[in-house]
Image (cartoon, rainbow, N blue to C red):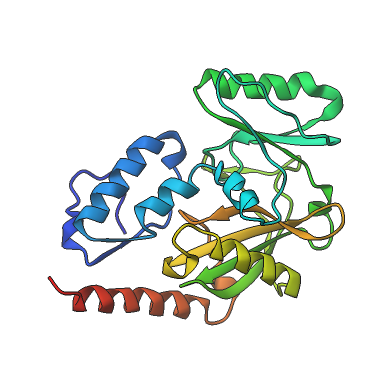
Length: 262
């Protein structure tokens, strides 16, 4: 395991580089993408740099919606633009480049000034803001469901407790503490998640890993909250055989790379 920004690392010395936990990339986005491009020119990178670029900016939600996926309705506003606020009792505001629920807040519609101020703070930092309705069903029994895919094939599912609740701890200044447990995905959740993976540019079967986070809408139907293709927690300890599936996928890539001509 090495740091992505360690200038002393010779990336060409590795047969494969697997991106796992660069949780500081959100504040160093351009630097991180430049690094990914350099590594991909030197050796194999999983996931590939074009996927890292696409999925680290949550404006991809617009691409998924255009592809016909059921997604949480999302509005975007770049600096200098006004937010087209969702018609909802509460809204969630966050930057489009973010992770671990950092800089993410809930705002009641009756206190729109707070949401506007949040957007203004993000704009002052040069960041694009996004707003979504807060789907309160995430606090129910189904909660948020994370479906993990390895080589484009469904591996296992987890149930995640609601993140935007009072009293949750910030771990190391990087992410909000999570309540995680193993779960069985419903047929509807599997169908939406598989459609989301298929809609990833270039196809999800070429990715080493993917995680699709779903929440129930007001009618209880699963909708895509986000895709995690860069540095997801894969929760391998929560599902028998999951670590072996990832290890086999990595080994397969090593075999493929070593047998490639040139």
